[in-house]
Image 1 (cartoon, rainbow, N blue to C red):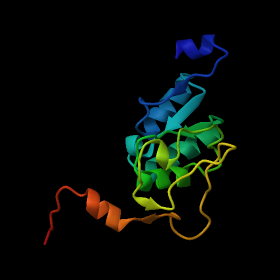
Image 2 (image 1 turned 180 degrees about the horizontal axis):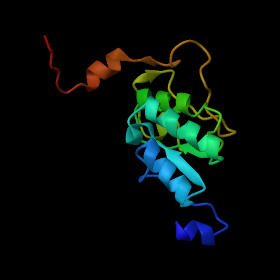
Image 3 (image 1 turned 45 degrees about the vertical axis):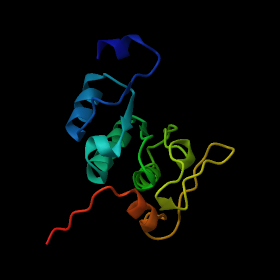
Image 4 (image 1 turned 45 degrees about the horizontal axis):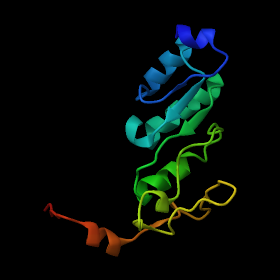
Length: 144
């Protein structure tokens, strides 16, 4: 917390923020001026939204972290990134950057301007490729 007070450069907290309470404590201590939100790290959309809303109320910009997710996780990151306080560039990247062939259609692409198309229809806007998932599946278990 002392470091941020001595710097003009904003400190971004990332891996240490798992809950809304941790984000609140960091903000109240003056430990950061930016927070990274990763859906997988915070436990999903509900907590991510709470952290987003808290940061927005306190004037702390946020950005979405995520690089190695498959297309399904990447689609959730894109949806999260559409919230109004996601004002900094995230690290959501094109499918082809990490995967020869993703498990969703359409695959996530990045425009020459560095933007990602946000689907406008109902749902996540991407469809799982069940054939691809089946081909990649190593083991199945059926629960009765």
